[in-house]
Image (cartoon, rainbow, N blue to C red):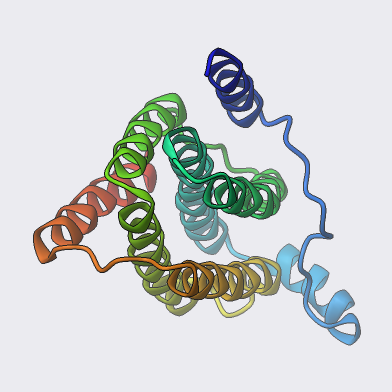
Length: 214
């Protein structure tokens, strides 16, 4: 257990320092649109660039939270196969983290100043979910990913139409989140009580509203 805590602490430091790297290339518009995407990026107005930066900062915070949630759930999991499932999902979410950080850099935007707070709170939630049992913890994944899917749909509606690069990243993130939810369902996820789902939405609303600005 001590080794597991050391590994979790090391992962937290690497997540918050931005040293985690993507295993997959950053999603881009189709090859024929590559030049037009670069031109569209250059043509974004200051207002559009600021909006894209704020939305991608929220998405980056979401990926900070995803790393923490999965690490907390893996630490508390009682079944090794379930633990490995959480760690595998965290590795894939690392791509999302790196992609959103890269996009923030391209837009000249910064990450949230509260990332350590988001990570700590999400790790605690993940650990508590894991302590409630593997089926409940998997149900937590399903509900989280469904809420993230809705959130990404809203961002696709709000992102400037010309911001092809951000839109490509968000589309791929959404596809991955849908798959994670389906995988958790197939692994035996238990449905969460309505009050828990409501509470998760309330916490997510506070996080996204705050991260949009700070």
